[in-house]
Image (cartoon, rainbow, N blue to C red; front, side, top):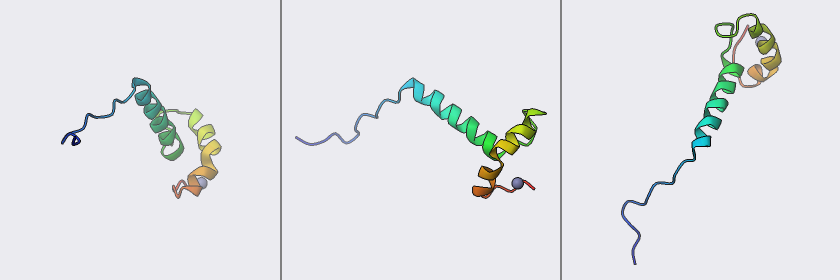
Length: 61
Ligand SMILES: [Zn+2]
């Protein structure tokens, strides 16, 4: 018996899309948030992630 030429794709559970969306949002907050979306809260978020931003090489000041 031989394997099929085009194996069936592995199904992706629906919750995986939600997890990916949350992960992308958190990554954006850590790397890019400079006040566009969060307003006054952006300064707190920036300070919270500040060392992490520099550890990842993101310029911020
Ligand atoms: Zn900095």
